[in-house]
Length: 171
Image (cartoon, helix red, strand yellow):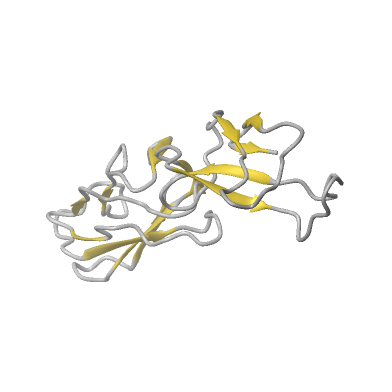
């Protein structure tokens, strides 16, 4: 498995699954289908990889164009093969890899006060995060986030109106 891949883009290293016999040699008679799913290590809300089924030819399934789209975090891929070709059911799990965000494309309010009184600092602060197109907080986003009052409200802001994000979040 790749050490790191980018969310929604082809995996840096495409999986190659080889059926082996009892001696550890490639079983060139194996002609089954290998299916990839998200393995036992995954963040909540993760998705199934694309291009997740591949027929083995002479015991080898070469995946291509496989992408994984979902929550950023640590993943493994789990590969299952059928019993065609005389081998027992094949199962293998990849090593763990990190699915990273492709970069911040928007800002999202992740926390805000439920109510505010004029002239009093709210007990709950606003938190604004840089998020990718999948809604993941982009931890390497370190831009400046500004706040302003909408037109026609007549309100006045005081205090910090621009704050730098730390680990993707401005508070």
